[in-house]
Amino acid sequence: AAFRRLAAWACMMPPPPVPDGRGMLFLMAGECALTAFIMAALIVVMCMLARRRMPWGPAAVQVMLLLVLLPGVGGALCLPRLLGAGGAGSMWPVLQGMLLCPLVTVLPLRTLLRVPASVSRTAWGLGAGTWMRVRMLWLPLLGPSLVLSACAGLGMGMLAAMVDAGAGVGT
Image (cartoon, rainbow, N blue to C red):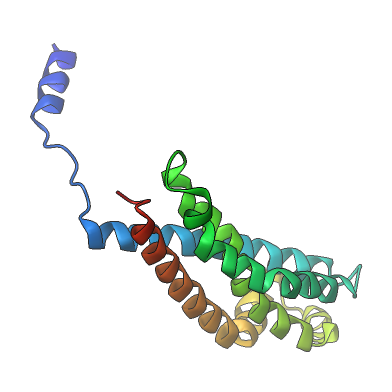
């Protein structure tokens, strides 16, 4: 009896709304930017963790990111035109976010390289735990560059979504 009531209730539910053109544009831009932000956060955190053992590691990562920055942005914008709109239509924003990752990562990584490693060690020596160092040291130091990279990522995500809409990917 409970299953029948649940089935009747499910049949009465209206279908989920389908986003219009503008809603789809914002959805694709958000998906692209979110993919770039997640990858950038992983890269910056890994560089912060590897900084003690390999002092040259973040600098090497930054050089590699700078080498793929312009081809990545160009590839993100040209991807739907080069490969066509068929097939993996829902995967375009994710692929474009992966290509935009160097753009979002370069600014926080550059800020991280400018901060001496002794600052974190000093905070640890004075009794600051991990979360206190993140909250009181790293977020204020990385804050302006994180905001700037978020603006760049959202702007390029919107531009990539507009290129996708022009290529007929979202339709």
